[in-house]
Length: 110
Image 1 (tube, one colour):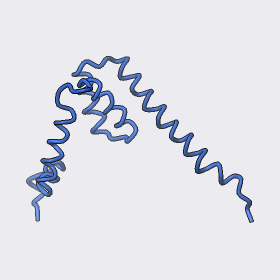
Image 2 (image 1 turned 90 degrees about the vertical axis):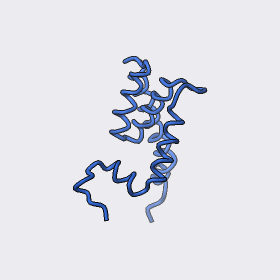
Image 3 (image 1 turned 60 degrees about the vertical axis):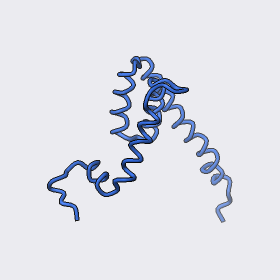
Image 4 (image 1 turned 135 degrees about the vertical axis):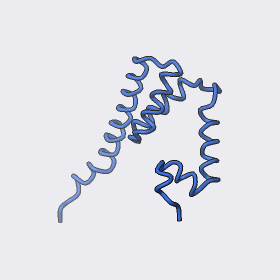
């Protein structure tokens, strides 16, 4: 059993508990965000911010927002990214409401 008094960082405990998987994830993440490919680093980070807003991951929001700024993202680009994510979340609610919630209002209550 792991002595958690020596290691209080949850990420370290995760890496210790599943070292190969944690290493593979780190390598994958580095490959995704490392350098400019078809998408430049700033675009990748803005996409990550938008996704993090929809998943509501605080650590992802902090990390990718800072990385986006470091990659050259402006306040206006970050603000627009927030609005794009908001539109997608709202659009999802509208779609699912129409597809799954509203049909129930037309069922007979027998």
